[in-house]
Length: 170
View 1 (spheres, rainbow, N blue to C red):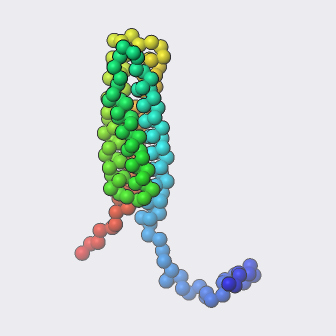
View 2 (tube, rainbow, N blue to C red; view 1 turned 120 degrees about the vertical axis):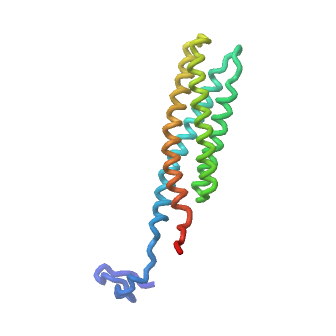
């Protein structure tokens, strides 16, 4: 193979007139790449928030109280949803990303409901200082989950829209 010489300026065999025949990458493919690079950190942040919420729900359980099974289940399902979202993002599967968006939205609503219910009933139970702090951390995580979920819905919607093939007009 012939190597380019810095003084030559142009490789041999090309006179520059073939520019109109070269392929151009469709803009939606670059939009998909940008969307994936925006969605991955959001999924990672969501998974971290679900882990924090899960640990807070488990640690706030005392011996005389029942476990907050709804909070534990919603955080565990949220981790599964994050895995589905990452899989859909990695493999460019629009149906998995749609499932991720729908399921993680339901999980987020459940998490916020559990956190609000926990904060409202905290005063009735006279929680200890550590338990109250953990419930506060769980409440803040649920609020952050809501903000991250809104961002994830926007980014995922744009990503799925760009992944879908363009419709042809007749």
